[in-house]
Structures are given as structure tokens and as C-alpha cells.
Length: 277
Image (cartoon, rainbow, N blue to C red; front, side, top):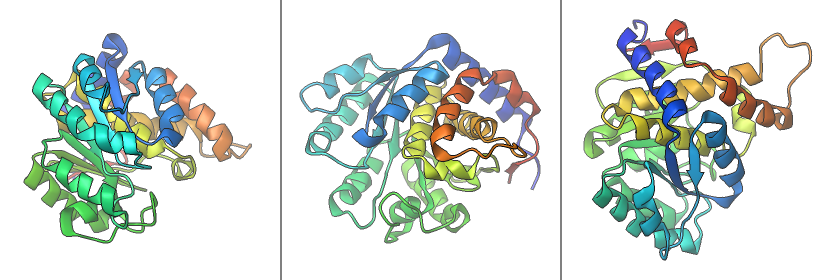
């Protein structure tokens, strides 16, 4: 497989810079347990979070947002009632949105909801391999939010989801995979500690939303920009060869600092660990 196309890296670099310059407002509906790292991560990246999930207010507020991110994890009654009309309002207002089908498979309510939402035109779907297998081929899912499959196991399911929905699909794991149904890009960056901190997947979905907000016409580049941003920041937060081991608590704080100091120009040197086919 060749290195990732230079034009994708150039586009991603411009997108990260645009997030910093335009400070998009990202409306996020998702589990409360991950709200702090998502909100703080967006702020560290230069975006602004909006966290409202009630049917009384979310559909009105989303019209003022630059992007919407919908996560199905820890689905509350308020979110269950608020998500469908909020997505409908976003579509009506032309606000691009991201579907994060967290922990679907065993859970019947959120699984049905995720399948319904997939038909509502998300620009990007971001999940782990087990979640994408549920959406693409009717798999049984993982154990809660934990994946029991590798992204390569879900590649064909992800491509099927992309072709069927028209969305760009990002599969998170040790090697992240991004596809539009035809093009496939692999990202071999990150840290094992990403899987030991609650909410890093939700944070990635929110970063995708921030990048999509400034480049709605290029969801592939926006998704890659967010994926590179988080995974390279994770490497910065957990440097190889460090004499002092980094644990998950320290890592979570250092990750926010790394997101904040991330320089868009660092993407220009991306070659190793990024492959396209």
C-alpha cells in the first residue's frame, strides 16, 4: 500500500488550522460519564462544546451549532427522546452531523436507534469494530463499549455502511481505518492508554464534528484530521522511551495538554504509519 495521498495531508493541515481559527460550536448529545473529557478536549482543541440532550431544548439549540455529534452510549430517557428531533432539526438547518453508535449490539433500544439514525444522513459514522459490524452485517456487538473485534475484521462492514449511508466511516482501534466505501486509509498512531481512559472514543467523535464543521465539503479529510490530531496527541502524551511510566490518570491530563499544543504544521511530515489503498 502506498503512503497516504499528499493532498489529504494538506487538506487535514488546513482543517486543523481552521478549527483553531474559527472555534466551531459542536453540539454533542452523548453519555454523561464522558462529558468532561469531551467538553475539555474540544476546548483544548480550540472548539466550543454545547451539551444539551432534551427534546425541549436540543432541537432549537442545534440550529445555532456548527456541527452535531450524536452518541448512543449510556442512553438516558432524555437523550432517547431528544435525539430524533435534534437530528431532524440539524438536517433542516444544514448542520453536518456525526453518528457515534456506542455500545450497540446487545442493548436493544440503542441498537434500533442507531440503525434508524444511519438512515438519516450522517456525514460521518465513528465507532469501534464491533459496533460497525452491528451496523454493517448484523453482528452481535462487543461487551458494552468494549470492542471484541479488530478494525480489519470490520473493514468490509465499514465499507458497506459507507456505501449504503453515503457517510464516511471511521473504525477506531490499534490501527484506525477511515473509508468512504471505496478509498481506505489506515492510521497507525496512538497509545494503548487511549483504551484505558473513559471517553476517548467519544472525544474522537467530537473532534470529527469540530473538523467537519469547518470542512463539511470534505468529510474524508475532516475525519482524518481529527483522527491524526487525537492519535498524535496521544503519542505526545505517552512518549515512547520515557523513563517515567505514564498511567491512565496522568495520560488523560497530558492528552488535553497535547491537544492544546498540537501544531497543524506537524501533519505535513506524516508518512510512516499512514497507508492508503
